[in-house]
Length: 193
Image (cartoon, rainbow, N blue to C red; front, side):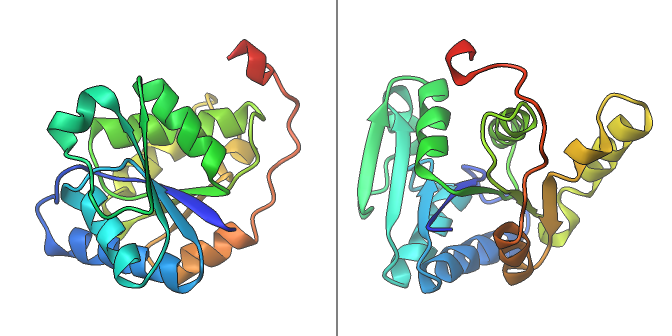
């Protein structure tokens, strides 16, 4: 993996461990020569992960929609900042630039980005590993809900197994390196999206 997209909150959350782990993830990616792709902002966990990677001399590419520049405040020290028009264009560009995705704590926007990436994987539009860094059990209830989807017949186990989960950065990265996408038939083509 040469590039990883990270989706995370534009705020810090209520516990210091979220910020600490975001910074450490940024550092770890840089130390392992993995380029960080993220939302381009200098606020919350978004700014923190970029700062962690930059502190270790890592390459960081931000992708920020034009209309969010005033709200999310573009990070000024990035390797590259790509300005796009829409949120969908942002996710598409972040997907194009990465070899895998990691999700940190966040709100609605983070979940929306995560679910779109895992849905694209389920449909066979990409074969990239998608991991949740489950800091301090933040995503425990979501993980239970995903299992309920399997138990109630709305999600196949093979698609549940596409989701890689750990609360330890190095363990999650190792799972991502060893990931093999399931062989599922493409229901739609990229052109139909």
